[in-house]
Image (cartoon, rainbow, N blue to C red):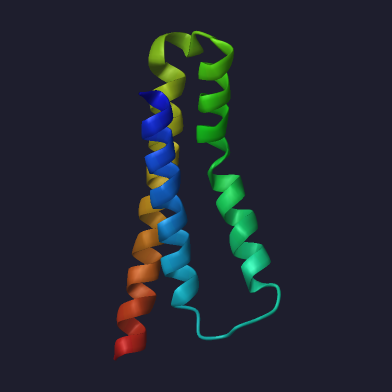
Length: 92
């Protein structure tokens, strides 16, 4: 179940980053590389959780799981809000 939740969270994080990158007016050659790097860095907590679950570790009775998901969801929400602000500014 943890793998499914982590997969869906990473998918939503990717969608938020794609939404933000679609709102960018300037298409710089290194822009995609920066967004990919930021996506990978922000998905590290969930990758660590999936790895820990695969190995069979106890992850401190769920405290690490909650913290990893909380951090990823905060980053996802932050990126989506910035993308929405840019979207509405571009429409005006």
